[in-house]
Length: 346
Image (cartoon, rainbow, N blue to C red):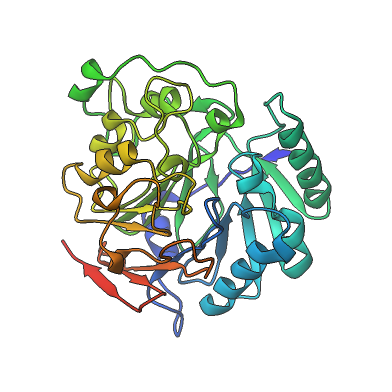
């Protein structure tokens, strides 16, 4: 395996890289694909380059691969340039073989070998290895940049390690760290998740996979190493198990990110915990929280209004949420269930 690297020829060169091609879409598009409580997020930049983060579940007659393919078709692409597997749990890496059977993948990227002592995770990793052998494969490290011309994709965490130096404009002390309870370690693949920041001009979107509290706080305490973002994909499907190693969405990182919009890729009975929903809902600067599913176990008080939820009840309709972002950080979010959409400007 080799590390993914990218060398920029100064700030001017980087700005030129983000100039849309004539006739190309003038926005960055993000598709939060419904894979029933797993993850699959497709990002297509104005150059037509594509990044897929995770592939959802296996089986179900190729359900998740079909949904990814449908989103790709809506985006006007017929292949995936990069597939990043955040970690090797079935709800993130399980659909890789079915996806590769339907669409060409240029490069697979991941954090390296499986690090969890679990039969199901070892099996998922074994399948992934065989599929990735048929294409290019790179191992990601914190600080790496993926070689896209139309967007900036930076790795913040991988294999249990995180960036050490603050990103440009970040590094402020985080006063919430003092009141954050000590986070226990997590031996699972969740804590090894690849976390990334995607930047398009002034627009910033963060996806930390299933990172759990100890690793989240490594990015936010004692200083906020990331800065603020426009869209926060709620970590770990909106999971919170306070006091356990499996908890995510710590207040110290959620508030520090100061997102304008949050998206939760939960299922009707997976993720969507009331505690995590409330933490994000109450975070400073948040305008709206969009959900892939109604969280049926959380109650009405811990779900957004129906217009912001792509799939209601126990229905397996596969409706996705789409974001279209501009260089100036204006972006629109649309619910494919009802065509409800909202534009966010600064």
